[in-house]
Length: 154
Length: 313
Ligand SMILES: C[S@@+](CC[C@H](N)C(=O)[O-])C[C@H]1O[C@@H](n2cnc3c(N)ncnc32)[C@H](O)[C@@H]1O
Image (cartoon, rainbow over all chains, first blue to last red; front, side, top):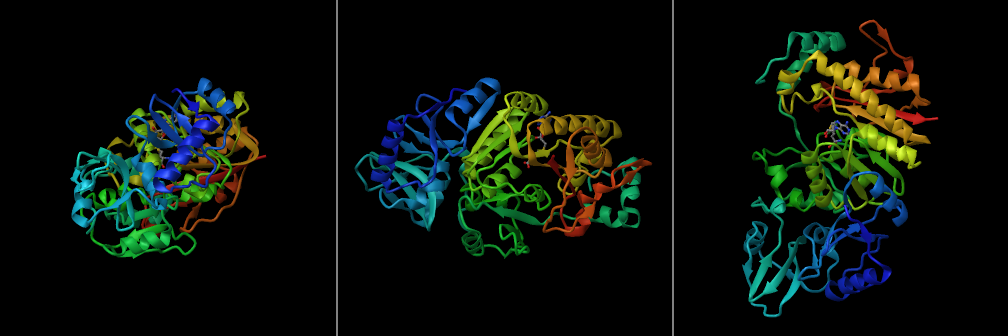
């Protein structure tokens, strides 16, 4: 697969965006890796870029780290990254009630009073349920099929 | 059970367990307990327990391993794998015996670890948690559908220090060794005949035959031998299977001891385990083989497992 480390400058911009948009500061040593046109992955594996390039030419790498940002119409934080880092969010998050959370985890978009088009981190009772986008008085759903469920409370 | 064990298998189990064989077959008919492992990359054991206790009865039977939780409540089919906490990666549904191999390996933050036969990632996710996402894991498998599941599990559990590769294990190791890409720790959780998983899926009884065991034993030796070539000297290797057949266990370990600079080492597990065999059907193994561990279903109410821990001199 195509693997490209983001430059220091690009990484800095993304860090700044996370901090300014959500108040998220990730205090781990990590690399951001571009694997497709708009796809950025988060990787904490301790290996130099040079060694990684050597590996990638030597063996068949299927995947590296986890999905982090989608830059297409974004930047949108990926579901599994939001559930990993989302609890740090101090702004631009939306708390759902139980009925909304149920619908959200089923994959439905939800009506919203908000007007301003933007991405929000979705929360429910201390859980982070990914990210959504406010668009035309709706909260658009991005919960991946595999993560959807009906079972949010017993 | 939907399938009955073949006479040949019954005979072999009898030769391993003698008067206990009956108790073993009885256990095979019982359903497995619902066991989960808290994914400490995403939530503390204390917080997860608190959340789950709102709906289930949760036990933490092992003081040194609070991440191991048994759900005692009656569950609907598929409930564990569909609950919100599962979808958010707070826990992994994993059989108790399977958790023992990473516990034996003891991976640490900042180490370089190879998980040679990794899919669907029960043990890879556990290893990443033990390493606190620091260091490097190469997780390999050959089956693409299983790699998809591995990938999804790693993403769900937030395992960020992993590179997934898709190759025959022995070829991967040869290539890595040639480039002097060596590991501190290696797990070879080998493909096996699965005699230990009868409680989970008794269809293994239908597939079971001696030819398959012989063929697998050959593959296991090949995988183990190649893994040794990319292990650092002083590094540790855990070889594990979920089967009882000595041809896939002690015989494979004996082959490795005979051909490579390896020694068996002692290790502790939270489960009751029995020593490896020193003899099978007239074939003698090294007395050191007692350091291996055999986990039998009837001893801890689990599936069956075999674990050997080796150090490279
Ligand atoms: C016992 S399972 C691994 C379970 C896994 N370690 C876990 O804990 O979830 C054995 C795996 O070995 C893989 N396998 C079979 N032949 C292989 C080979 N030659 N090289 C690498 N992996 C192989 C199978 O696809 C299978 O996923």
